[in-house]
Length: 390
Ligand code: RFL
Ligand code: PHB
Image (cartoon, rainbow, N blue to C red):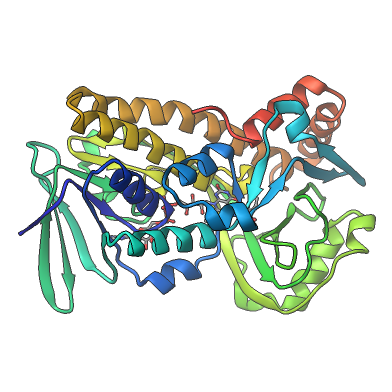
Protein backbone atom coordinates (compact mmCIF):
# COMPACT_ATOMS: atom_id res chain seq x y z
CA UNK A 1 0.00 0.00 0.00
CA UNK A 2 1.21 3.53 -0.84
CA UNK A 3 1.67 5.98 2.05
CA UNK A 4 1.65 9.74 2.37
CA UNK A 5 1.05 12.34 5.09
CA UNK A 6 -2.05 14.04 3.66
CA UNK A 7 -4.33 12.41 1.07
CA UNK A 8 -6.22 15.12 -0.81
CA UNK A 9 -9.45 14.12 -2.56
CA UNK A 10 -10.26 16.50 -5.45
CA UNK A 11 -8.07 18.61 -7.77
CA UNK A 12 -10.19 21.76 -7.81
CA UNK A 13 -8.70 24.98 -6.46
CA UNK A 14 -9.02 23.81 -2.80
CA UNK A 15 -7.18 20.53 -3.30
CA UNK A 16 -4.45 21.94 -5.53
CA UNK A 17 -3.79 25.00 -3.34
CA UNK A 18 -3.66 22.89 -0.18
CA UNK A 19 -1.25 20.47 -1.87
CA UNK A 20 1.05 23.29 -2.93
CA UNK A 21 1.09 24.97 0.51
CA UNK A 22 1.69 21.67 2.33
CA UNK A 23 4.55 20.85 -0.04
CA UNK A 24 6.09 24.27 0.74
CA UNK A 25 6.03 23.23 4.43
CA UNK A 26 7.64 19.88 3.64
CA UNK A 27 4.41 17.89 4.18
CA UNK A 28 3.99 15.05 1.68
CA UNK A 29 0.65 14.81 -0.13
CA UNK A 30 -1.10 13.01 -2.98
CA UNK A 31 -4.10 14.43 -4.88
CA UNK A 32 -6.77 12.00 -6.16
CA UNK A 33 -9.24 13.42 -8.72
CA UNK A 34 -12.07 11.60 -10.46
CA UNK A 35 -12.00 13.69 -13.66
CA UNK A 36 -9.28 14.49 -16.20
CA UNK A 37 -7.23 17.70 -15.87
CA UNK A 38 -8.85 19.05 -19.06
CA UNK A 39 -12.32 18.46 -17.68
CA UNK A 40 -11.45 20.34 -14.48
CA UNK A 41 -10.11 23.25 -16.56
CA UNK A 42 -13.22 23.28 -18.76
CA UNK A 43 -15.52 24.34 -15.89
CA UNK A 44 -16.02 28.12 -16.08
CA UNK A 45 -16.57 29.46 -12.57
CA UNK A 46 -15.28 32.23 -10.35
CA UNK A 47 -13.65 35.42 -11.50
CA UNK A 48 -13.00 37.64 -8.48
CA UNK A 49 -10.20 37.02 -5.96
CA UNK A 50 -9.95 38.62 -2.53
CA UNK A 51 -6.60 39.63 -1.13
CA UNK A 52 -6.68 36.70 1.35
CA UNK A 53 -6.85 34.42 -1.68
CA UNK A 54 -4.11 36.18 -3.68
CA UNK A 55 -1.91 36.22 -0.54
CA UNK A 56 -2.27 32.44 -0.21
CA UNK A 57 -1.51 31.90 -3.90
CA UNK A 58 1.58 34.03 -3.34
CA UNK A 59 2.57 31.95 -0.28
CA UNK A 60 2.21 28.88 -2.49
CA UNK A 61 4.55 30.50 -5.04
CA UNK A 62 1.79 30.50 -7.69
CA UNK A 63 1.51 34.18 -8.50
CA UNK A 64 3.67 35.10 -11.51
CA UNK A 65 0.91 34.99 -14.14
CA UNK A 66 -1.73 36.34 -11.71
CA UNK A 67 0.48 39.37 -11.04
CA UNK A 68 1.11 39.91 -14.75
CA UNK A 69 -2.41 39.26 -16.09
CA UNK A 70 -4.82 39.74 -13.15
CA UNK A 71 -6.75 43.01 -13.19
CA UNK A 72 -6.85 44.96 -9.91
CA UNK A 73 -10.32 46.45 -9.33
CA UNK A 74 -10.73 49.35 -6.92
CA UNK A 75 -14.50 49.54 -7.16
CA UNK A 76 -17.68 47.71 -8.08
CA UNK A 77 -20.94 49.07 -9.56
CA UNK A 78 -24.60 48.44 -8.83
CA UNK A 79 -27.40 49.36 -11.23
CA UNK A 80 -31.03 49.71 -10.11
CA UNK A 81 -34.08 51.85 -10.83
CA UNK A 82 -32.35 53.47 -13.81
CA UNK A 83 -29.30 54.47 -11.72
CA UNK A 84 -25.70 53.31 -12.04
CA UNK A 85 -23.80 53.72 -8.76
CA UNK A 86 -20.27 52.80 -7.66
CA UNK A 87 -18.87 51.47 -4.40
CA UNK A 88 -15.33 52.72 -3.93
CA UNK A 89 -13.85 49.53 -2.47
CA UNK A 90 -10.35 50.88 -2.15
CA UNK A 91 -11.37 54.28 -0.82
CA UNK A 92 -13.62 52.70 1.82
CA UNK A 93 -11.43 49.77 2.90
CA UNK A 94 -7.90 50.34 1.59
CA UNK A 95 -8.22 47.00 -0.22
CA UNK A 96 -9.02 45.92 -3.76
CA UNK A 97 -10.01 42.69 -5.51
CA UNK A 98 -8.29 40.98 -8.44
CA UNK A 99 -10.15 39.81 -11.53
CA UNK A 100 -8.42 36.57 -12.54
CA UNK A 101 -10.44 33.52 -13.54
CA UNK A 102 -10.68 30.31 -11.54
CA UNK A 103 -9.65 28.47 -14.73
CA UNK A 104 -6.36 30.39 -14.75
CA UNK A 105 -5.80 29.88 -11.00
CA UNK A 106 -6.38 26.14 -11.47
CA UNK A 107 -4.09 25.99 -14.51
CA UNK A 108 -1.31 27.79 -12.59
CA UNK A 109 -1.72 25.41 -9.63
CA UNK A 110 -1.65 22.36 -11.94
CA UNK A 111 1.51 23.63 -13.65
CA UNK A 112 3.22 24.30 -10.30
CA UNK A 113 2.27 20.84 -9.02
CA UNK A 114 3.64 19.19 -12.15
CA UNK A 115 6.91 21.23 -11.99
CA UNK A 116 7.38 20.30 -8.33
CA UNK A 117 6.96 16.63 -9.24
CA UNK A 118 4.08 16.16 -6.76
CA UNK A 119 1.91 13.11 -7.16
CA UNK A 120 -1.57 13.54 -8.70
CA UNK A 121 -3.93 10.79 -9.85
CA UNK A 122 -6.48 11.94 -12.44
CA UNK A 123 -9.43 9.87 -13.70
CA UNK A 124 -9.68 7.85 -10.49
CA UNK A 125 -12.96 5.86 -10.39
CA UNK A 126 -14.90 4.74 -7.34
CA UNK A 127 -12.93 6.90 -4.93
CA UNK A 128 -13.72 5.94 -1.31
CA UNK A 129 -12.47 7.09 2.11
CA UNK A 130 -12.01 4.62 5.01
CA UNK A 131 -11.16 4.46 8.73
CA UNK A 132 -11.07 8.22 9.32
CA UNK A 133 -13.34 8.38 12.36
CA UNK A 134 -11.23 6.30 14.76
CA UNK A 135 -7.51 5.74 14.83
CA UNK A 136 -4.73 7.49 12.99
CA UNK A 137 -4.43 5.57 9.74
CA UNK A 138 -7.22 6.62 7.36
CA UNK A 139 -7.12 5.32 3.78
CA UNK A 140 -8.32 6.38 0.35
CA UNK A 141 -9.05 3.76 -2.30
CA UNK A 142 -9.83 4.08 -6.02
CA UNK A 143 -9.94 2.20 -9.28
CA UNK A 144 -7.76 3.23 -12.18
CA UNK A 145 -7.32 1.33 -15.45
CA UNK A 146 -9.21 -1.56 -13.90
CA UNK A 147 -6.80 -1.81 -10.93
CA UNK A 148 -7.63 -1.09 -7.32
CA UNK A 149 -5.28 1.28 -5.46
CA UNK A 150 -5.00 2.16 -1.77
CA UNK A 151 -3.28 5.07 -0.10
CA UNK A 152 -2.71 5.28 3.64
CA UNK A 153 -2.29 8.72 5.19
CA UNK A 154 -2.22 10.59 8.50
CA UNK A 155 -5.12 12.79 7.34
CA UNK A 156 -7.62 13.04 4.50
CA UNK A 157 -8.57 16.47 3.11
CA UNK A 158 -12.00 16.29 1.48
CA UNK A 159 -11.61 18.91 -1.28
CA UNK A 160 -14.05 17.14 -3.59
CA UNK A 161 -16.74 19.78 -4.03
CA UNK A 162 -20.45 19.77 -3.25
CA UNK A 163 -21.16 16.42 -4.96
CA UNK A 164 -18.04 14.67 -3.63
CA UNK A 165 -17.68 11.44 -1.71
CA UNK A 166 -16.06 12.76 1.50
CA UNK A 167 -19.02 14.57 3.08
CA UNK A 168 -21.30 11.75 1.90
CA UNK A 169 -19.14 9.24 3.82
CA UNK A 170 -19.73 10.87 7.20
CA UNK A 171 -22.38 9.05 9.27
CA UNK A 172 -25.58 11.13 9.26
CA UNK A 173 -25.72 11.44 13.06
CA UNK A 174 -22.32 13.13 13.17
CA UNK A 175 -23.06 16.00 10.79
CA UNK A 176 -25.58 18.89 10.69
CA UNK A 177 -26.58 20.35 7.34
CA UNK A 178 -28.03 23.85 6.90
CA UNK A 179 -29.42 24.66 3.47
CA UNK A 180 -31.38 27.24 1.50
CA UNK A 181 -32.16 26.67 -2.17
CA UNK A 182 -33.16 29.74 -4.20
CA UNK A 183 -36.01 29.60 -6.71
CA UNK A 184 -33.85 30.64 -9.71
CA UNK A 185 -30.48 30.09 -11.39
CA UNK A 186 -27.83 32.03 -13.29
CA UNK A 187 -27.33 31.58 -17.01
CA UNK A 188 -23.72 32.53 -17.78
CA UNK A 189 -22.08 33.36 -21.11
CA UNK A 190 -18.36 33.73 -21.84
CA UNK A 191 -17.26 35.61 -24.98
CA UNK A 192 -14.19 37.14 -26.55
CA UNK A 193 -15.65 40.63 -26.52
CA UNK A 194 -14.35 43.64 -24.57
CA UNK A 195 -16.13 44.07 -21.19
CA UNK A 196 -18.97 46.60 -21.33
CA UNK A 197 -17.52 48.51 -18.35
CA UNK A 198 -14.10 48.65 -16.68
CA UNK A 199 -15.62 47.46 -13.36
CA UNK A 200 -18.18 44.75 -12.55
CA UNK A 201 -21.84 45.80 -12.63
CA UNK A 202 -24.42 43.96 -10.48
CA UNK A 203 -27.90 44.76 -11.81
CA UNK A 204 -31.26 44.79 -10.01
CA UNK A 205 -34.00 44.85 -12.66
CA UNK A 206 -37.71 44.09 -12.81
CA UNK A 207 -36.96 41.35 -15.39
CA UNK A 208 -34.42 39.79 -12.98
CA UNK A 209 -30.81 40.11 -11.86
CA UNK A 210 -27.89 40.49 -14.28
CA UNK A 211 -24.12 40.70 -13.84
CA UNK A 212 -21.47 42.15 -16.15
CA UNK A 213 -18.14 40.56 -15.28
CA UNK A 214 -14.94 39.92 -17.16
CA UNK A 215 -11.85 37.74 -17.40
CA UNK A 216 -9.51 40.18 -19.17
CA UNK A 217 -9.69 43.35 -21.25
CA UNK A 218 -10.79 41.22 -24.21
CA UNK A 219 -12.90 38.51 -22.56
CA UNK A 220 -16.29 39.09 -20.91
CA UNK A 221 -18.42 36.99 -18.58
CA UNK A 222 -22.09 37.91 -18.30
CA UNK A 223 -24.94 36.37 -16.30
CA UNK A 224 -28.72 36.74 -16.29
CA UNK A 225 -31.04 35.34 -13.64
CA UNK A 226 -33.07 32.53 -15.20
CA UNK A 227 -35.77 30.11 -14.19
CA UNK A 228 -34.83 26.76 -12.66
CA UNK A 229 -36.49 24.88 -15.50
CA UNK A 230 -34.67 26.83 -18.20
CA UNK A 231 -32.42 24.70 -20.41
CA UNK A 232 -29.22 26.10 -21.84
CA UNK A 233 -30.10 24.61 -25.27
CA UNK A 234 -33.16 26.84 -25.33
CA UNK A 235 -31.05 30.00 -25.00
CA UNK A 236 -29.48 31.05 -28.29
CA UNK A 237 -26.63 33.58 -28.03
CA UNK A 238 -28.98 36.16 -29.58
CA UNK A 239 -31.65 35.51 -26.95
CA UNK A 240 -29.04 35.90 -24.19
CA UNK A 241 -27.68 39.22 -25.51
CA UNK A 242 -31.22 40.52 -26.03
CA UNK A 243 -32.24 39.67 -22.45
CA UNK A 244 -29.02 41.11 -20.99
CA UNK A 245 -29.45 44.37 -22.91
CA UNK A 246 -33.02 44.73 -21.61
CA UNK A 247 -31.75 44.57 -18.01
CA UNK A 248 -28.86 47.06 -18.35
CA UNK A 249 -29.12 50.84 -17.83
CA UNK A 250 -29.40 52.53 -21.25
CA UNK A 251 -25.94 54.12 -21.12
CA UNK A 252 -24.41 50.68 -20.48
CA UNK A 253 -26.62 48.75 -22.96
CA UNK A 254 -25.54 51.17 -25.71
CA UNK A 255 -21.91 50.16 -25.21
CA UNK A 256 -22.47 46.39 -25.08
CA UNK A 257 -20.36 44.54 -27.65
CA UNK A 258 -21.79 41.10 -28.45
CA UNK A 259 -20.22 38.08 -30.12
CA UNK A 260 -20.40 34.29 -30.27
CA UNK A 261 -20.36 32.47 -26.92
CA UNK A 262 -17.32 30.39 -25.95
CA UNK A 263 -19.33 28.75 -23.17
CA UNK A 264 -22.87 28.95 -21.82
CA UNK A 265 -24.13 27.21 -18.71
CA UNK A 266 -26.80 27.37 -16.02
CA UNK A 267 -25.93 27.21 -12.31
CA UNK A 268 -28.55 26.79 -9.59
CA UNK A 269 -28.17 29.05 -6.52
CA UNK A 270 -27.81 27.55 -3.07
CA UNK A 271 -26.63 28.42 0.43
CA UNK A 272 -25.34 25.39 2.33
CA UNK A 273 -23.15 24.72 5.37
CA UNK A 274 -22.11 21.39 6.93
CA UNK A 275 -21.10 21.42 10.60
CA UNK A 276 -18.57 20.52 11.84
CA UNK A 277 -15.84 20.32 9.18
CA UNK A 278 -13.68 17.75 10.97
CA UNK A 279 -14.56 14.08 11.53
CA UNK A 280 -11.61 12.39 13.22
CA UNK A 281 -8.89 12.39 10.56
CA UNK A 282 -11.10 13.75 7.75
CA UNK A 283 -11.49 17.47 7.03
CA UNK A 284 -14.02 19.05 4.67
CA UNK A 285 -12.60 21.97 2.70
CA UNK A 286 -14.20 24.43 0.21
CA UNK A 287 -17.38 23.46 -1.63
CA UNK A 288 -17.32 20.01 0.04
CA UNK A 289 -18.28 21.76 3.28
CA UNK A 290 -20.27 24.80 2.14
CA UNK A 291 -21.82 26.54 -0.83
CA UNK A 292 -22.66 30.21 -1.28
CA UNK A 293 -24.77 31.72 -4.06
CA UNK A 294 -22.31 33.47 -6.42
CA UNK A 295 -23.73 36.99 -5.86
CA UNK A 296 -21.03 37.94 -3.33
CA UNK A 297 -18.14 36.33 -5.31
CA UNK A 298 -17.21 34.37 -2.20
CA UNK A 299 -17.10 30.62 -3.11
CA UNK A 300 -13.53 30.31 -4.32
CA UNK A 301 -12.33 32.84 -1.75
CA UNK A 302 -13.87 30.86 1.11
CA UNK A 303 -12.32 27.69 -0.28
CA UNK A 304 -8.95 29.48 -0.16
CA UNK A 305 -9.41 30.67 3.44
CA UNK A 306 -10.40 27.12 4.53
CA UNK A 307 -7.18 25.94 2.92
CA UNK A 308 -5.26 28.66 4.79
CA UNK A 309 -6.67 27.52 8.16
CA UNK A 310 -6.05 23.83 7.42
CA UNK A 311 -2.51 24.51 6.24
CA UNK A 312 -1.75 26.31 9.53
CA UNK A 313 -3.35 23.49 11.52
CA UNK A 314 -1.40 20.73 9.75
CA UNK A 315 1.84 22.70 9.95
CA UNK A 316 1.23 22.93 13.71
CA UNK A 317 0.52 19.21 13.94
CA UNK A 318 3.75 18.23 12.20
CA UNK A 319 5.71 20.74 14.30
CA UNK A 320 4.59 18.86 17.42
CA UNK A 321 1.47 20.91 18.29
CA UNK A 322 -0.95 18.03 17.78
CA UNK A 323 -4.00 19.87 19.15
CA UNK A 324 -4.00 22.52 16.40
CA UNK A 325 -5.87 20.33 13.94
CA UNK A 326 -8.85 20.34 16.28
CA UNK A 327 -9.28 24.13 15.85
CA UNK A 328 -9.68 23.99 12.07
CA UNK A 329 -13.44 23.50 11.99
CA UNK A 330 -14.32 26.26 14.43
CA UNK A 331 -11.94 28.81 12.90
CA UNK A 332 -13.06 28.11 9.35
CA UNK A 333 -16.78 28.12 10.23
CA UNK A 334 -16.59 31.52 11.93
CA UNK A 335 -15.49 33.05 8.62
CA UNK A 336 -17.79 30.84 6.53
CA UNK A 337 -20.97 31.94 8.33
CA UNK A 338 -20.15 35.61 7.79
CA UNK A 339 -19.56 35.02 4.08
CA UNK A 340 -22.82 33.02 3.96
CA UNK A 341 -24.62 35.99 5.49
CA UNK A 342 -23.14 38.43 2.97
CA UNK A 343 -23.83 36.18 -0.04
CA UNK A 344 -27.41 35.57 1.09
CA UNK A 345 -28.02 39.28 1.70
CA UNK A 346 -26.61 40.32 -1.71
CA UNK A 347 -28.69 37.59 -3.37
CA UNK A 348 -31.83 38.72 -1.52
CA UNK A 349 -31.19 42.37 -2.34
CA UNK A 350 -30.59 41.97 -6.07
CA UNK A 351 -32.77 39.12 -7.41
CA UNK A 352 -36.38 38.93 -8.51
CA UNK A 353 -38.14 36.50 -6.15
CA UNK A 354 -41.36 34.88 -7.39
CA UNK A 355 -43.16 35.62 -4.09
CA UNK A 356 -41.78 39.10 -3.48
CA UNK A 357 -44.73 41.09 -4.78
CA UNK A 358 -44.53 44.85 -5.17
CA UNK A 359 -43.80 45.32 -1.46
CA UNK A 360 -40.71 43.10 -1.64
CA UNK A 361 -39.43 44.96 -4.70
CA UNK A 362 -39.99 48.32 -2.98
CA UNK A 363 -37.97 47.07 0.02
CA UNK A 364 -35.07 46.13 -2.27
CA UNK A 365 -35.12 49.54 -3.97
CA UNK A 366 -35.34 51.36 -0.62
CA UNK A 367 -32.36 49.39 0.66
CA UNK A 368 -30.36 50.17 -2.48
CA UNK A 369 -31.25 53.86 -2.23
CA UNK A 370 -30.21 53.85 1.45
CA UNK A 371 -26.95 52.05 0.64
CA UNK A 372 -25.83 54.84 -1.68
CA UNK A 373 -26.88 57.56 0.76
CA UNK A 374 -24.87 56.18 3.66
CA UNK A 375 -21.10 55.92 3.92
CA UNK A 376 -21.56 53.46 6.80
CA UNK A 377 -23.78 51.15 4.73
CA UNK A 378 -21.44 51.32 1.73
CA UNK A 379 -18.43 50.58 3.94
CA UNK A 380 -20.19 47.51 5.34
CA UNK A 381 -20.78 46.15 1.82
CA UNK A 382 -17.26 47.11 0.71
CA UNK A 383 -15.49 45.38 3.61
CA UNK A 384 -17.45 42.19 3.02
CA UNK A 385 -16.91 42.32 -0.76
CA UNK A 386 -13.12 42.70 -0.49
CA UNK A 387 -13.14 39.90 2.09
CA UNK A 388 -13.19 39.85 5.89
CA UNK A 389 -9.82 39.25 7.56
CA UNK A 390 -8.77 35.65 8.17
P1 RFL B 1 -14.53 22.25 -6.89
O1 RFL B 1 -14.00 23.34 -7.77
O2 RFL B 1 -15.91 21.78 -7.12
O3 RFL B 1 -13.52 21.03 -7.02
C1 RFL B 1 -13.81 19.76 -6.48
C2 RFL B 1 -13.04 18.72 -7.26
O4 RFL B 1 -13.29 17.43 -6.70
C3 RFL B 1 -13.54 16.52 -7.75
N1 RFL B 1 -14.34 15.40 -7.23
C4 RFL B 1 -13.80 14.21 -6.86
N2 RFL B 1 -12.55 13.77 -6.88
C5 RFL B 1 -12.35 12.50 -6.44
N3 RFL B 1 -13.34 11.70 -6.02
C6 RFL B 1 -14.61 12.10 -5.99
N4 RFL B 1 -15.61 11.29 -5.57
C7 RFL B 1 -14.89 13.42 -6.42
N5 RFL B 1 -16.03 14.15 -6.53
C8 RFL B 1 -15.67 15.34 -7.01
C9 RFL B 1 -14.26 17.34 -8.82
O5 RFL B 1 -14.16 16.74 -10.10
C10 RFL B 1 -13.50 18.66 -8.70
O6 RFL B 1 -12.38 18.70 -9.57
O7 RFL B 1 -14.44 22.65 -5.35
P2 RFL B 1 -13.33 23.53 -4.58
O8 RFL B 1 -11.95 23.12 -4.99
O9 RFL B 1 -13.72 23.53 -3.16
O10 RFL B 1 -13.51 25.00 -5.17
C11 RFL B 1 -14.67 25.75 -4.95
C12 RFL B 1 -14.93 26.69 -6.12
O11 RFL B 1 -14.88 25.95 -7.33
C13 RFL B 1 -16.30 27.40 -6.01
O12 RFL B 1 -16.56 27.78 -4.67
C14 RFL B 1 -16.39 28.65 -6.88
O13 RFL B 1 -16.30 28.33 -8.24
C15 RFL B 1 -17.71 29.41 -6.64
N6 RFL B 1 -17.89 30.56 -7.52
C16 RFL B 1 -17.27 31.76 -7.26
N7 RFL B 1 -16.43 31.89 -6.23
C17 RFL B 1 -15.76 33.07 -6.01
O14 RFL B 1 -15.00 33.16 -5.03
N8 RFL B 1 -15.91 34.16 -6.83
C18 RFL B 1 -16.73 34.11 -7.91
O15 RFL B 1 -16.77 35.08 -8.65
C19 RFL B 1 -17.48 32.89 -8.15
N9 RFL B 1 -18.29 32.78 -9.20
C20 RFL B 1 -18.73 30.44 -8.65
C21 RFL B 1 -18.92 31.60 -9.46
C22 RFL B 1 -19.37 29.24 -8.98
C23 RFL B 1 -20.18 29.17 -10.08
N10 RFL B 1 -20.76 27.91 -10.36
C24 RFL B 1 -20.87 27.33 -11.64
C25 RFL B 1 -21.12 27.02 -9.28
C26 RFL B 1 -19.73 31.52 -10.57
C27 RFL B 1 -20.39 30.33 -10.87
C28 RFL B 1 -21.30 30.35 -12.07
C1 PHB C 1 -17.60 35.83 -12.54
O1 PHB C 1 -16.85 36.60 -13.16
O2 PHB C 1 -17.81 34.68 -12.94
C2 PHB C 1 -18.28 36.31 -11.33
C3 PHB C 1 -17.95 37.55 -10.79
C4 PHB C 1 -18.59 38.00 -9.66
C5 PHB C 1 -19.56 37.23 -9.06
C6 PHB C 1 -19.88 35.99 -9.56
C7 PHB C 1 -19.24 35.52 -10.72
O3 PHB C 1 -20.21 37.71 -7.96
